[in-house]
Length: 88
Image (cartoon, rainbow, N blue to C red; front, side, top):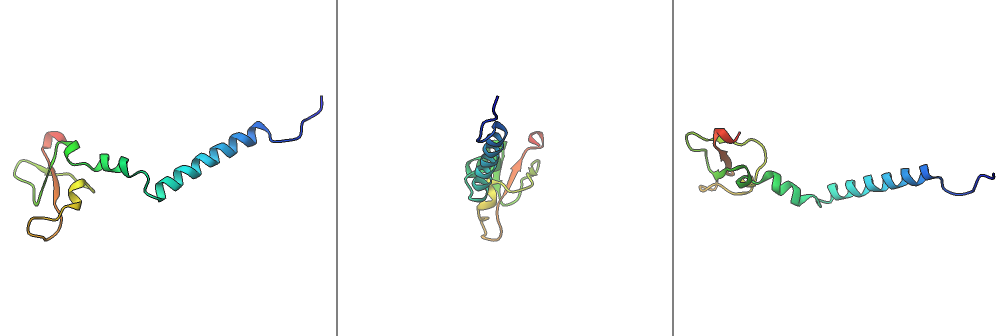
């Protein structure tokens, strides 16, 4: 039996995986995963609320949240996401 000339299955699979990785990298670096990060950073989705400073009995949710984009009432700094300790 003669060995055929052409691309092997292994070469095709490796090329497909490389193409998939390239597409994911392009999506990450062009900001196409914005919908995903919005959901992860949404303070309301974590049963929280945006305040200038957290009221007694609540805690600041660390990291970037949807509140980080809101200016504080006095215009100094940004608001923070406050959640109840049970929500941590």
